[in-house]
Length: 372
Image (cartoon, rainbow, N blue to C red; front, side, top):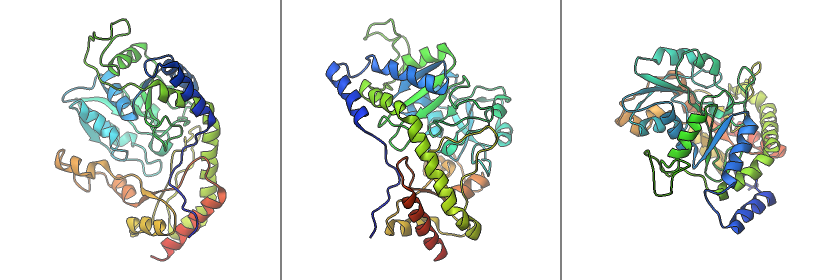
């Protein structure tokens, strides 16, 4: 069998090692100077006034929702087509995620559907820049409600007004898991234009301690959502190589589009949408939708047998067991989301993916689909 092609692979090298060793030798592994340096560098990269490093994208979503006032009994309008963390973070605050269907082209939360879902109890809108494609932020801003952006998949993207995702001023949350555009292993960042929001997040990520308080004093409820200096050191090195990694992802995506164009035309394979106007995708994953009537999971198994890793990406949140059983959701509520979720497959995708690997994936996928 040919060499297996992995689904994802981070880019790590000597720079990350040297920065981590520097922190180790300093003896200050957390709450040291490296975290703030990472925050400043990240904020500059996306054009944000402030940034707060946190232990995960999920932690960032939780703190950002608290910062805009989401609390008991509130409603937050969001997408059912996302990683489950975007909905779970709403539930953490005993609020209710109110799902609205997605745009069939961008796969982002549909602004018209979101507007129709708003009630007098709606406290915030939580759009997800799914697979790195920017949601229609100007449309959501016209609703006049606080916005928390789930930008965990969208580093490097720009919205329809050409603004880098994370730079519009309302809280935007990024994730640094190992398959993301950059990684700290685990970790995340919240950007904001509001110094008060940063101060609150900085306190609540550190057990509710204010900057001028002793380490055993706390004036608000908080959490252990800190990012260590070791992780921040990796993040600084990753920021230095980010432009190159984003370019590598964009090149891999271009190779995929070229390799799959004929298959898309022949078998109605769904490809990621092209950029529109000033909108630019920050490439995170390359997800296709298999033809309707195809057993998606059987395709994944067949690709695995041929040495190609792939994955269902993503299931509909409202049809997960917890949201069915506890929140009463059912099939048929969000037909666009359900159709896309049932047919989506993430193909191998990472900055160092080679053209011959992309061509092999396309060849194997075509063989599997034609055999069904």
